[in-house]
Length: 368
Image: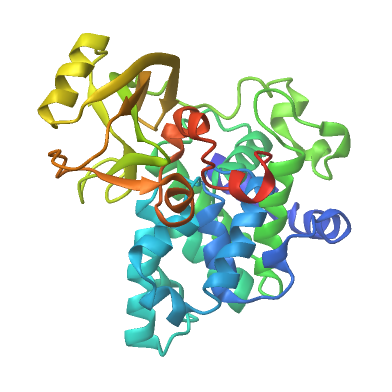
């Protein structure tokens, strides 16, 4: 009975929400035209990344790769370089796999079919719903974290929104109220409300919300309690020693394994554990590199979804490379490394010692 009441309550939000969206929506480059390719790329980029940070990445990506066919045939190193700084590199690999499938099966155009979209690599319920509804006006919901928060607060839902059955139920409720004439606008309105007004951590701007009078969480002063999320598992801590190995204007980098964390990207040479200077010197001897000078530099940390790296670092100046054994690394000019090799942001603190900029820093002077 309560689920039925919630669905009926949600029917009342459609008209005021769309009206609010038409007056308050942000101007975003992927909204300027209903290009399914643009919508797809932007939605993947926006997963766990702020809108303002995504804008220049998006513009650069579609400028370099203006069509699905361009993505399908792009060299992997170039693709990863375009994604450098966004993280979650498997996402862009899946974009390429999906693009290749779209070229093969759909003549380079994203299919105007929700189930077909869902069958592409890296596209789940949310992204398929966003592309289908916004680009093709197919009445299917697009339920992301912002939407889950808005609906949970409106209906005063005390269930854990990270549980699949809860998400499925909310999708089902929204499916029943999708406006046939404006499904894309309705989905974007819900996302926009969650991103700009019904924000998390008790900071909701209820005075600006067109749905405030209908909101159960506001009515009962429960904005701090809803939505409910189970406590995340603690991250695994890994200690690392990062080496800036330099020969003049050249620095040592190496490619990571083709599987696992940061697969296929390039990195500064590093080892597990926190090594002493003497231990680092022994590693250099193993590479038959003559160390001219070594000195410690700052500590740093980088947080991934399930792992946290706690790093110490050393600058290691070495003699000429002739005769050394360094088959698992390559010495490249620092500027060449910045331009050509995708290096993850995890090494940003140490790349700074080389005046080597990573990701968006190369285009903004460090400002995102």
